Amino acid sequence: MKILRIAIICVLLITLGLTALVYPQLPDPVAAHWDAAGNADGTLPRPWGVGLAPVLMAGFTALLLVIPRIDPLRKNYVQFRNYYEGLILALDLFMAVVQLQILLWNLGTRVSPNVFLPIPFGLLFIYLGFVLEHTEQNWFVGIRTPWTLSSVAVWKKTHMLGGKLFKLAGIFCFGGIVLPRYAIWLILFPVLIAGIGTVVYSYVAYRQELQDAQNS
Image 1 (cartoon, rainbow, N blue to C red):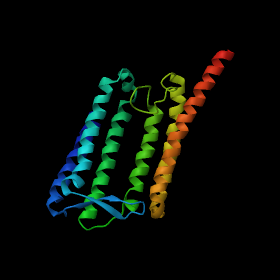
Image 2: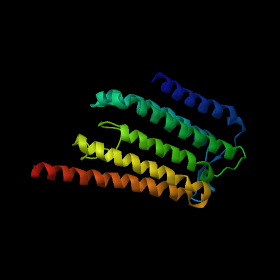
Image 3: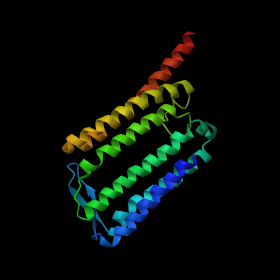
Image 4: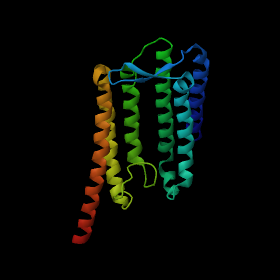
């Protein structure tokens, strides 16, 4: 939808504009890395420290908008285009929140990423779950294993399971709000389990499909 593309552009422009507005007030170098406990433990020169997120946002947005045009299965994107462009918007919003945390910290408002990021991570994973449930077979987006790409049925089964697992992973992320010391683990472990689980399931489902075909 055109409104999603307008929203994507607006998020990019607002992030760039806010960064440019506060840039002269930032120290040099800036804090740009935090440990698992949420303590700043690394710096970068100011241009790199606050310029990296907007550059990544712009680059990934451009790439993701081009992908449907070059995918050999591009006709399938029509069936989930709104979810796909919504995912681009969700990723840009997530990166905008990351950039906001970096800017606030370096402006003197020391908001730990362990407190700031569990909610956007959780919301991103939950939305990704919805996207997976509606994603049709393609070469770039979704759970792309040899088995999902070899069978439409396995693709659909795997993505329905993946959708549920990523939604659960998102819910676990919210635990970081009340347990900030463990926020990084509440983000990483559930999504890692979801990712590995869907890959394993795709293989099992494909083997089952072959077995059913041989027995019929």
